[in-house]
Length: 403
Ligand SMILES: *Cc1c(COP(=O)(O)O)cnc(C)c1O
Picture 1 (cartoon, helix red, strand yellow):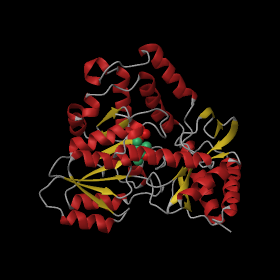
Picture 2: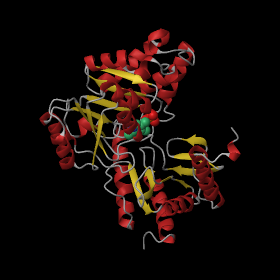
Picture 3: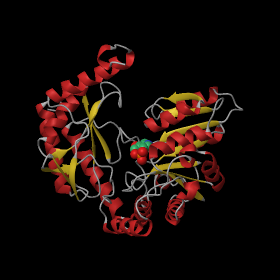
Picture 4: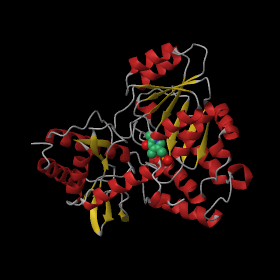
């Protein structure tokens, strides 16, 4: 097939993307996949040869590069090598995998845990393994893409409730047949808006309508609760969630995903979920790094304290300047810009002042709510944060977002 001479739908889609990217590049508005040349602690990074304040990292507790974690990873390489060379069932299970799953189960106050090689694969596989045709899933409108994809792949009836709207959720639950299997699923902290779910109400509704509850803790692990163990600790509501999902790629400076739950549920997933059975196990270094990171979180609670102080300073400061930061209460701070091109222009202005932030535009967020999506971590100093806010203020004034 001659690509140049066809005009089918695929060709048109590719051309539309090519044109959009060329336009953005020509106008100095293209910020996709900017290479970080070097990490300098958790708070600074070298980009385009310049040292910038890092405000686009998910390393909420500043654990990336932590000496204990690096050491654990190196030790695992010496002991096991760099790969697992296969799936868990066929000689891919190492003692470090079992140790990691035990550590996660303890950290999350559950009987057992299972790991996968990414958070994305975890949601895709777990939702589609638990749910099937004839079942009903209820998903928040702005849930992460991996949850949406898992729901679609499951073939279950897919119901989306308005963001964090518990009345709407209840209405949908009420309307579903009483005798079908039901799953309610949501991010704990929303990845684009930073707001927190109403867990007590969700638990109550799931009990009332006999539904399973699955919560994705990508942005609450290490962030919520005094010990950083997550959303259940934050609400002092242990045991309310049936399936506690999380990633090993954000606060935990590794890669992978997990589910912590009752033994029977985990055993079922181990024997039935395809991403576990048909995809290679986590590399030893990554499993060991993750295992050590959970221990560091418990040993160094001051990091959570620091993160909370930094979050307050950052959100409070930006609000005082007049920015719309939606309902965030966490380290994810949206700075609303409006249309996509304004978000790109804000990014350019802020980055020119050596503050590394990135834009999020449609379709990742609703049209008209394009934004800078800035994050603070425990690694930032108050003076750094002050400087970053001044840069954002200057850019916001130049572009007319604030007075
Ligand atoms: C990042 C993220 C994921 C995916 O995790 P990975 O480990 O990066 O694949 C899943 N859910 C939410 C809410 C996320 O933010």
